[in-house]
Length: 268
Image (cartoon, rainbow, N blue to C red; front, side, top):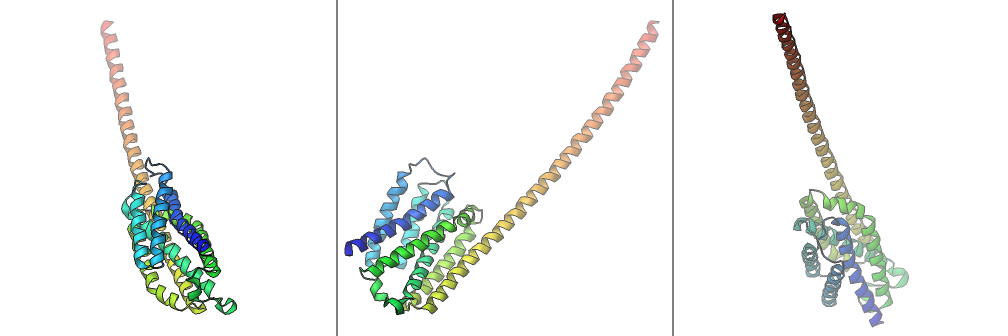
């Protein structure tokens, strides 16, 4: 049982880290450096080993989470030609997603303790309940991240990465603040409260993204309008130049015609 539980924990760490590098690869595919794909696997294994070791000391402590965000963002710099702010915003947003879904799934899983006699102490041991919780939580996390990738990718690739980083960081600090009461009392009420917190954070990020998207559309529309005005001005300038040249050509033809007539009359 201990070996199976350790193996599941190892797979869970690989899933968390590997999903981040997969998301980064889809987000910054065009900015990829000339680096082989096996470096993603090497970094995934290294970081998963470190996180597993830290979790054996304290399960997902604040230090572990901040270490993960720092190592994940710095290691991604070796793979992609993008600014560190963009990589850090992606790392913080991803960390918020997997931490929130993990805690929410755990609370929902443990809210059925009255039916199956599951408690907080049981899941911290090498037991089938612990294995079931890990599998359930990571499955929810994968579905959540993969479902939101079409929202996360354009949000990170936008020109407002600093705002994305600020919103994600505030939401992550709120997660750290509400994590202890959520862990101390596994109940339906706490699950609902934490679920609402996750939904509000997601809604805030979504609304922020839509606002930034609308601002970008307005900017593009303004640029297109300016370009049309410049094209109209250039067209009018070219048109006036053409008319001036046409009048000059007409006058020149008239002068040449008169000279030809005079020369012809003189010869006669």
